[in-house]
Length: 439
Image (cartoon, rainbow, N blue to C red):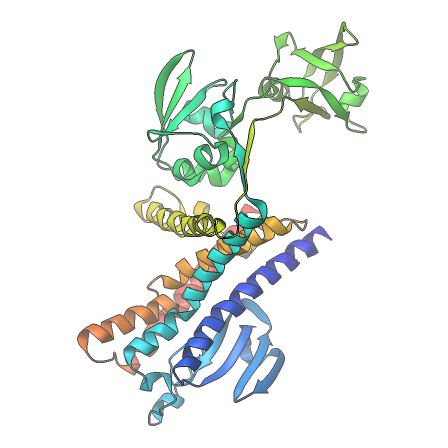
């Protein structure tokens, strides 16, 4: 059931974005009197259609191959590669008969709609949910580094004061945000009362892809007591009870949660003795740690300093717009890292399986719309890339036409479309194969 929910969310989210993207092209074409012959969600490869109907001279339908969608615009060289129409004399309702500036707007229509959708989605999220984060400036015990944090030199108890010279206030936004996770940032930390700087490697995104951002650092929290014991676990066999307070593992004091977690991991497939306080008395419980590096206790920790902000309807608009355009900024930086060789393409790129895993196996509408907004902006960016067969390729050719004062030849455009098509197929196969290998 979880897998079906995950697939359903992906199909719903992508369907919304595809329909709205193609609607942008459709409305722009109709506005300039250009005939639109087909409007399809998904591709009707080999002519196989799940559903279709005709309305006012346009065929609307759903294809069987869920890799996108398209509108077939009369007199245009597109992914359908229908060149028969182009052998006829240009008609006034055809794409090729219109001025270059009108054709440019038609090709930008889908991208413009994606940007508008992204802004509106993040606007409504900011209005509905506001913003909340952990106040990093109020973390009394600093941070607990994960696998990645330890590799870059962060130590338990370090307080991260600044990122690139700016105060680090919001934990997730400032410390686990793109400025740090994309690499190259300088952290100013406080350790044992002294300040020092840590340089984040430019290729850290490779590590983030392997371990996720939470393995960089988490707020350091003191443990309070055992709140739950999992049935059939080692903790149950060791006779833990709810309310027990853990003091040490094999004689090593474990005041903080990260200390306890580290000691458990150090003793995988070994025997352990855990000192606890129960009803004012100190006891020692003996047991072992299996290969999962857990014993089956859920621990209560001190509360984190959370800051929350709510925004009015209009006040939320600039907040949403900022979030939306940050997605494009991150994508630009990410591709720059790939081209510079700082980040491996197989680490940075995800396909349909990776996207599905982001949605998860449970329905959370806040998360769903956040991902839809992010994907809408990412699609806008991807479609603007100057690759033939993408909107950006058509835009590039139209700009060349406007500069040189005459259109590029149909023969050139047909060949460019084929090259672009094969590039896209190769990219899709790479990302899908990469997803499967990661999985």
